[in-house]
Image 1 (cartoon, rainbow, N blue to C red):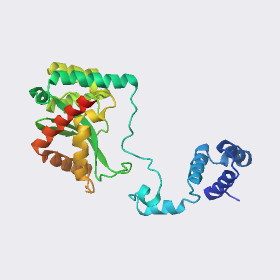
Image 2: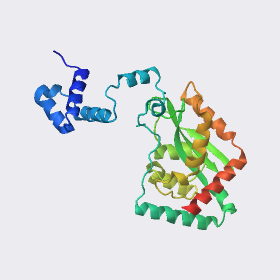
Image 3: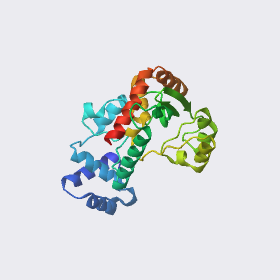
Image 4: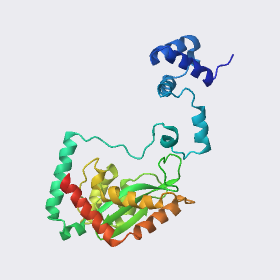
Length: 270
């Protein structure tokens, strides 16, 4: 008799009901079936399902196949395992660096009404999707770099024929179109990028790590524009990028002004 996953699932469920540990269950299966026994991760997954009261997930699987965009939390009561961003708990050193950066930046700006804020350009990268949804795993996408200031949008530059930002891309394509100081990332802080900025008399403004709430693009531009595009379907990543650009250009000037005022307020309360 050839055993399949259904048979093994029944055996795992039997061992679960016997209150065997996952290790004990695996040991029994290995002693009987050898190399054909399920992997430890399979046993762990099924134990998790059984603990949540889901002794048979075939119905769930059928629902997902019928509509992959179904809200599993609302309709099925299961956990969401794929998310866009997981908060990072800052270490004491990172917290101190964040506070120190905020204080130094505020000292340079002097006040909310200081004209110095107009000399600051903020740049960051993000994926633009053909269909904006919670789970990005199976959607066509293209990365863009967007640069903004208190005066408004500066530039949005897509990456062509590559999927990640590199120092070469920064110095040959991105920065020649505008000269904003990039954020904290390996491609941003690469020696080649720093050298280019120095030659162009552009000061590099360090950004504290794991602090997206202090980046205008992270707390304003990207969520604001992507919410406007949510629910729209585009035929290609290029079409999605064009729609993103148009939405950014349509943003009223007073919104950008308010964005950077909010940025200063965030630093004051950090």
